[in-house]
Image 1: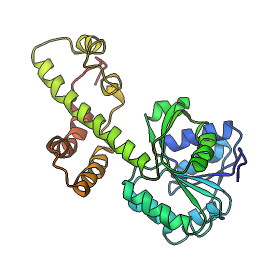
Image 2 (image 1 turned 90 degrees about the horizontal axis):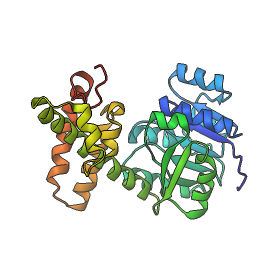
Image 3 (image 1 turned 60 degrees about the horizontal axis):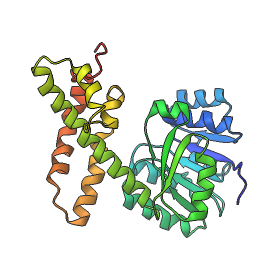
Length: 278
């Protein structure tokens, strides 16, 4: 199936998912949505989407389905569970996993889908909700080239950048490494900010100077947008990969523990790198 205007389904339409739906509709796609949150569904309907009560019902109305649910078990339930997506999709359809999950999860899903003639596109996305609003997300693709090319047409409505990194699973590997480095940097910014504040230095001024130096980072630039909401899940994925590879990575282990407290710190009393009111 090569129609550039495929029937698109989106399962899991939170803050970023709704932005993606809006861009898809503006791009001329017919979009069907499903979500357990009725308010999110209502917002999507106002944009021009149609809704389905279950993943199976959505699968009968779509041939390219994007998953945006939060966790590995939710991905498996949506696809493989009762009223799941896999049994409803026609052969030749694509399941695009834009949830952040373990590489093993998406590879196992690919095996199940291939047995039914359905392709899986490993397609986690990077950047954040403001980039989603602007249609400037980054997609990290893993999968066969023809499937990736189908994905480029769809994801091009809300992504300004797309990278094909290898087979199914490699997209999630790339996302895990991206997030690992983000949280390493973000933990460092909490500690560096505490040290800097103790000296009385103007922290926003220091930030401006650092953004011109070797300490420049996306984490420092986007400090106000960082919430640590998904940090523990991200580091648990990295930890699983570390254990499977038999690697000893002490910094990774420390960051996994530190992000538990970092979410509270960031929400209550973080270093004020930007000078904005807390």
